[in-house]
Image (cartoon, rainbow, N blue to C red; front, side, top):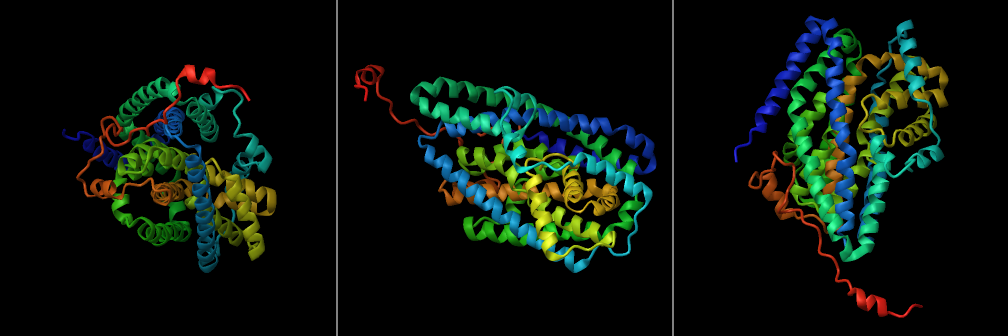
Length: 449
């Protein structure tokens, strides 16, 4: 069947270019178009909770052994911590090497902008963060759009269905039908991507212009190059050594998702498509259902690099450089505070301001220096986070024996194209068979202990 969606993504590219033009030529008009981009991202976020719920429930509920879920989750979290540490070290090395904030000076406007961001980024304790994972009600996890809360509810539901054995089959079948409906709705929403991209880009360019980009070219270029170094060298080497998969073929396979992220500056907008595409690639449903949503909250490689370099930039620009010990302690705090905010545009800036406010209040004014270009840095941040989660899913699948490399090579070679119409892979991703359950009569006759 002919893929009509290729025209959609060509339209996105044209819309982005048109948005840049409008933002430069008619900046006031560009600013007024911001609600269009905001509305499109809101439509995407509307679908996140139901997609995560259906995917995880089907993945966990159809697994015959709960130990598999624990193994996948443990490996994933261990890997996420290791990669965040590597990203932190790389960011520290590059930031200290280039000293990006030298020669810049604060203005009253920058101080006011920093105060505003600090107010958004009030520090949150670890206890508050952990308690925040528990939703107020079983349903509020969906209505409030909290990824970690939805993940918790989905895991509980999946384990409960797993314990029900064969009696859970009708429920799993019903959730599978709901998943088809949800992905079909998402495919319909994606046809609005060109309009959303046009409004979002026009608003950013209209509000920022060229001045901020010129004055802060060093920090932007250094950040982009650092992210490229991390993805190309660290993630690329790991992917080849562990799974024998070429990084660039994987990134090309996810090209449409990268374009979507580039136009919205939010990796969350591509989360549903990443789940569908990684299943199609050959990673089992349980691994995808656990690794991808968890990675969106805990595998924040791009955010770690951003917080590192932005902190060093602010400290240098304000004439109050940090010692090595101060750098590490402050950035570890920020990494913890940023968990769960990977898909939120501008969350990195708020986390930066909040962390400085709680540790070094005299540095908060410096955040105003990068407010104007944070959206452009958010592009690289979101792209790096997304690439990291895609690679993590393949690695965890390989380590747990849940990755079909032969299937992946077929997909990456273009011989097994992804179905853009339904976003589902009906033939490849099937639930695992349930273990036989004793008849009701036998269970009744079993003496109680």
